Length: 204
Image 1: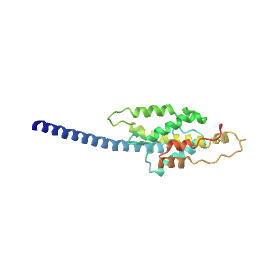
Image 2: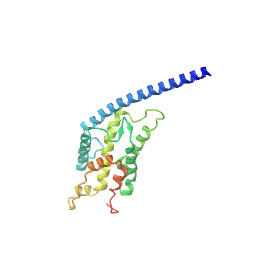
Image 3: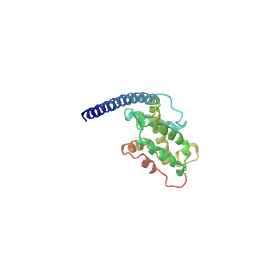
Image 4: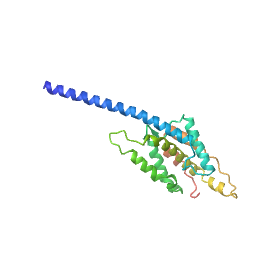
């Protein structure tokens, strides 16, 4: 009995040591991923305007707001932490899926691609699964731009018509997508913040 007890204690000690070492490795790995992600995030913001930013005044305005968003938060990521997707991404995807009901094409916001990347990042089981840290920073910036783009399209749908048709006399009200996103993140209500922007009219 005493021998059995000693073996049990030895096994438990070994198990605890293994768990502690594994947790330590995951923690160190997490810090390393965060550093790599931060470098990538800053690189995207300091580089050329990405392809997903539309080549028009609205796209330029939204990209400028995206850069300001990260400057205000000292370049801290908003959607991904230590290369792992946060719950806000799921809320963003849920909202973008509903774009068609708002008279908008979900594929304009690359919903399928986001869902695929989110699925790939969640395949790990009892492992430190997530995005590649070298692309996680870039993805975080992309998600921010997508939120602002969709929010702007919902709240200010007249902007495109006003900018393309010189005869259009109605000047749309300015919508501050930057502040809207900041408030949504602070209050942890990404989906609700977009849902409340749904236009009351049935047509744009």
